[in-house]
Every structure is written in structure tokens, then in C-alpha cells.
Image (cartoon, rainbow over all chains, first blue to last red; front, side, top):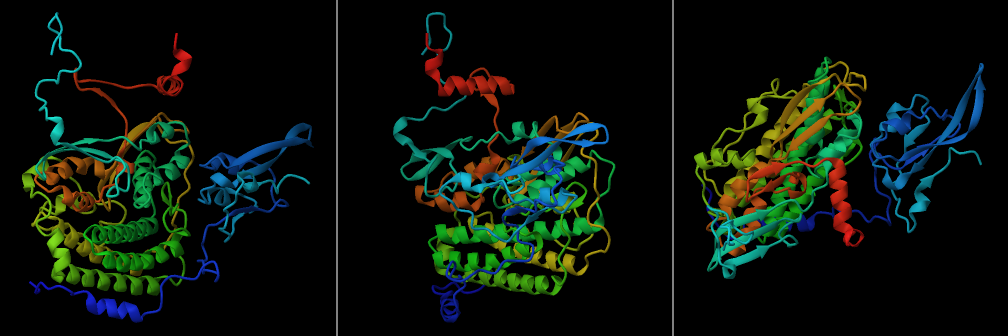
Amino acid sequence: MPRRRTGAAIPEMFRVMLEKPTTEAYPYKPIELTQRYRGKLDIDPAKCTGCQVCAMVCPAGVITMIELGTRKVGDRELPVRRPIFDLSTCISCGECVDSCAFNALELTKQFELATPDKKDLMMTKALPK
Amino acid sequence: MSNDQGKPTRREAPAGLIQYSVENLVPFGPIHPALKEPEYFKLVLEGERIVEVIPRIGYVHRGLEKAAEMRPWMQNMYMFERTCGICSFVHSLCYGQAVEGLTLFQTPRRAKYIRLIIAELERIHSHLLWVGLMGHWAGFDTLFMWVWNDREVVLDIVEAISGNRVHKSMNAFCGVRRDMPENMEDRTVERMKYIADRARFYREIIDTEETMLERTEHAGNKVSQETVEKLCAVGPMARYVGLRNDVRLNDPYAAYDEVPFDIVTRNEGDVLALLRLRLDEMVVSANLVSYAVKHLPDGPFRVLIPPVIPAGEHSSHCEAPRGEIFYYVKSGGDRIPERVKSRQPTMANLPTALEILKGQTLADIPVVLTAIDPCFGCMDRMSFLDTETNKQWTWSGEQLRQYGIRYYFPERFKK
């Protein structure tokens, strides 16, 4: 049994004092992110076909499909849909990215999403201008 | 007190319930600096000693089990991951295993190893967080700073593997969603060696530093092994009195049956024993991660399964950092579950916690209550029980909604 004494941690305190600080000077210096970092969701409108698989798998209800009209495939009339994203509820799980068969979605490394208005986080990139 | 017919009125206490005078009652919580989550304890004091603790749980009930009955199987995985902010992965693992039991698919070996690695990293980070909090409540804030600094090392590895520090989103049914990154082996082994060294160092500090010993040694009412067994404590709360209670060893899941390890038990039965136990467990976990990373088998890491789960019921249990968690799922052969039940370790540990609080001084409550590693937010579930008639019942979703409307808008129902 080691001897009980006061100040057993003092040598470590001196060692830590001489070390460089662990914290980083963010936001004055950019912080390093890992390769797999899951940040803000982004969509490539050119690749999206409106298949609505992402809307079906999303556990947070971020994705809503908007009907933009119809198109003719053979003799059938099919609706044309495009997604809009409410990023304020996105949990960045990446389930939509995994399920997208056309690689239209990706999770970027952007994480500074703080905003005074929630509406700023509505992403309507996929809708036609 | 009774009315003319001899029936007891509501004010009269039922037989068998001890009544304490109001002068001795001290409310503790629900909002209290010593509690990270709201929970109310009614303390009966004699002088400064605690005689009896009466808990009142349910302040952070979130309706998780009901919500699970309205979502597809895979979406529930992410919801149950958010049951806890610290041991998030093990909840999704336990739920996933329960669902996998209903299907005919086998989880690949590589996925089982990756699950083990993440689960053990999570155990290390949860224990480090707890040791820091213990230092904080024992008045040793320097330890808190050091320990939380070391916790960053673990979180960095978790982030490199899963892309997030806390909510890993790693689990899928019959596999994991992401493979281990390349060139991670050396880095992980090196970091785990560092963590094991630090855990040994903290163990040495705690064994010798007088300020820490004064506060934690003999703190907490000493309970016998039989009492703890009778009160069904799980995890470290069972192991600190010498019970070999660990799901990893008793009923191995993931890859725990293929890796060599032994659990840690202690016999002292005080808060210091819990500190030593958790620090020793961190060394075991660090060694487990190093072993699993070195012996990671080749092959696929995920099997894709259809969204409809066959009808049946299954349960699963896992060893979370705080103890055994339990999930029960029932499927009607549909895209959504019929019933999901979850039991968290704090719920099982609460009776023991009340027992070890007895006989302590009021000032010792933060230390002793933190020692059980409480997670009140995880454990709150709902059921109705009339203590006077001992009657239990359940409400449907619509009844609950009607109750909510009546509660928040009573003026609508006034005549």
C-alpha cells in the first residue's frame, strides 16, 4: 500500500504547466477536422432525380419532397419531385447520403450553422430557379 | 383519519408506509447543482444524518418507447442512440442486436470487432468523464481538468472512425455503416497505451493523495453482497462489492467471446472502490481495443437486410459503461415495430443508490450520488400505479393526448 500524503499530484502540476496549451484559438485559427467529419448536408441539384429515397430514410424528418409538375415516361404521367431540406433539424447521421443511388448528397466539413433566423437553414438548392 | 363509512380518506397513509414528520424532510432537487439532470429526492434527516431517501423520478420523460412504435426500424436506431449523450453507441448496439435476432441474417465478424472497438472506446470516455466529475465533487478540480484533457484523445479516435465525437451513427442492422479507416492501427494502439498509462497514473494519485482519500474512503453506506444482489444492481455498482456481474463475460455479444480479457472486481464497497474499479476497467478496455485493432478480421462489414422485419419478439442485453442495458422488441411483420421496451442501468442501480445514501451526512450526497454514475435522463419511463389500491394501468396514445390537452388548456373544459 503506497504511503498517504498531501500533494502527491504536485509534480504533475509542474509538468502540465510547462506543456503547451491543449485548447486551440478557434475561431481565430481554423481547427483541424478529420476526413470523415460529418457536417452540413449539401446537394448537387444536377444529379438529383427526385426518387425520394432520402426523404423516406431520414430519421429526423429533414427532407420534404415538393411536386413541380409532371413528365411523360412512355404513356405514363409521372410527377417530378425535388427535395427541400430543413437543416435546423438535421442530425448529420448520413443515412440519406448512404442511400442516395445517384451520389447527389454529401456531408460537407462546414459546421458553423448558428443563425438568428431558422429560415436561413432551409436549403432549397434543388428547386429550379 | 376516516369518514363515517369507515373508508380511508386520501389523506390517510396506507398501511405499511412510515410517516415522517415534516420538520425532518429536506428536498433535494429536482434542480440542484449536484445533479446534472433533474431528479427529486426527499431526504429524511436525523440531525445531519440521512435516515431515508424517497425518490421521485420521471422529470425528463420523453416518450421514446411510444415514439418508436411510429417510426421504421432503421430510424428507431438513431432515436435510441439519442437516449443517452455519453453511452450512445451501446444503446443502438443493443437495439440492433435485438432486431437482428428476429432476422435470419448473420452479422459479419469484422463488424462485430468494429462494434467492440467503438463500445470499448465509449466505455473509456464515459469512465474518464466520470472520474473527472468525481474529482470535481471531491474538491479536486485539477484532476477534473487533466482527466477531461485525456478524454479528448479518445474522442479524437472516435471522430476519426465515425465522423462524430458523441453520436457515432455507426450501427446498422447486421453490420456497421463505416469500415475502420486505413492506417488507424498504429495510431490507435499508441493512443491506447497512453490512456492505459494515464489510468495507472490516476490510480496512483488516488491511492496516495490525501485530499482525495479523505473525501472518498469509507464514503457511502457499506452494503453487503447479498443486499446488492437482492436489489439487482448492475455493472460497476455490482462489481464493487465483489459480484462478477458483467454481460461481456456472462453472455458475450459482439466479439467478446473471441478476445481475451477479465473483468475487474473489488471488495471494499465504498466510493474509493468505485474509483479504483473504473480506473482499472479503463486499462482493461484500452487493452481490449488494442487487441481488437491488431486482430481485425478481413471480410465484409455489413449485410444489407430488407426493411420489413419478420414477426416475432426478441430481447438483447449489453454492458453499457454504467451497467447492463436491456432492449425488448416485438415485430408484427411490418416496417415499424409493434413494441420496444428499454431498461437503462440507472433504473436498476437506483435502489442500491438509495441504500448507500443512508447514514451519510448531507454534505456527502454529491459525492455518493455521483459515484453511481447516474443518468436520470436515460431511465425515465412511464407507467401508472395507484399506491393506495396497488392498481396498474396503461394509456393509449389518444388518451395521453387528451390528458395533455386537459392539462395545458383546463379553461376549455370548464363548465
